[in-house]
Length: 231
Image (cartoon, rainbow, N blue to C red; front, side):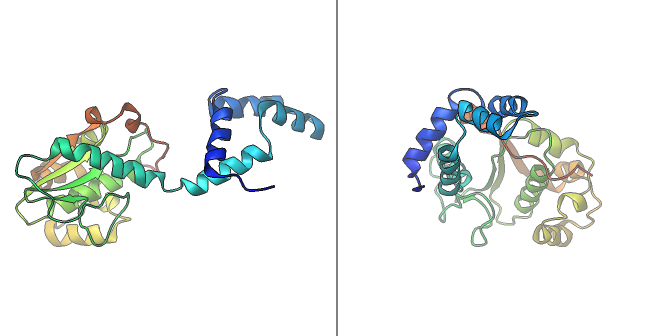
């Protein structure tokens, strides 16, 4: 079978997903193939539009658009910056637009007036990994000694609520970020401090801003789940 182009693959997936939501389609296939024979499985799959062509299309799209998260992050930051920057405020170096850490850029955005981290992840209810990343960003911003305004840009009210109310210890939140854990110990001391205590204390200089109203509504929805329970 010849490998489809990205354009062909997107068209194939669009036609399939246009019939009904993916979760519904899979649930229906599960129900219709219960106790089925080989011939019945084949018939059910073909009736639903599931075949080698659909599989090839899904594989192609996943491979070609695997970095879609980076595009979403970059587009969101570039959409927000014109609204956030004040008169006379300029970027002092190239921004870090992709998702994840960039060793050459301590913050996503640095201007002559502010340092900012963009934690643009919609929370789903299972958010241990998101909570850890959020607190790590807060610690890095709080530790900045440049004297510039520090901002943590988030989606929705949940991130700020977590920072202000969580009794989880800093040691839990930074357990998977050794660099940030070391920074916390050097600058702020005992990692037995709770997330809420740090937010109200050393982290109080960091402004936590909900930018969800400035972005498309779909940004608040995330397919990512948490990696483990909060301590």
